[in-house]
Image (tube, rainbow, N blue to C red; front, side):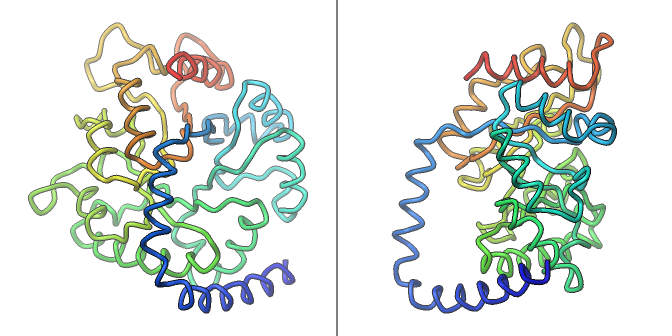
Length: 293
């Protein structure tokens, strides 16, 4: 790991010089990437929190089953099974299953000055370049939102040197009212365009908002998004399974492809209806998503 960290420090220096040299081409390059993103079909991943107990019991077996379901990637939730100290081994294992690390949920504390380089080194070894803060109470607090915004901007600049991005993942609370809008809107409008808005569409819908509208409201910011069902209170005759719920999936997929710049659609399953096991529920949501693609 020390060798990796040393390499990362050198990479950061090279990146800083490259930024100065290539700065004049930034606008055209950015435009080109935006145009390219509109043409691509996002890949399909799964948040490992969906099957956290299975991951804890049998990391390798669980990821093998997810690969067989047709997932192209996995999003980590800080459980790496036998590979917690061996990112090279984990990368080899993922490759053997034709899986990519679509991203990772990482708290602010893992990216503070003390832990930054070791965290970056671990995920960079996995070719995992999207580090998403999954939850922070300050993000829906009038006393804390300014700190969250400033920290996301600081980390965005810092991670850019390593070819990585930071982002934030919403729950329902971020859609509470704040300054004539919502905490989510305030965060989106006061952070760099390089900060990823990982919209959890289930929580967006649960909060009474339209996930399609929010993808379109902030073009190019939804590089990764959670495709999860969280049924609004009082919903009858529906299930928390993709395709058996209330979300307008065809228009959401269209918005992700055309506007969001979305690279990854990440299935997340937190409810397991009708006696389904977590893996069975994930498989059902994957089938539901596939039917719309």
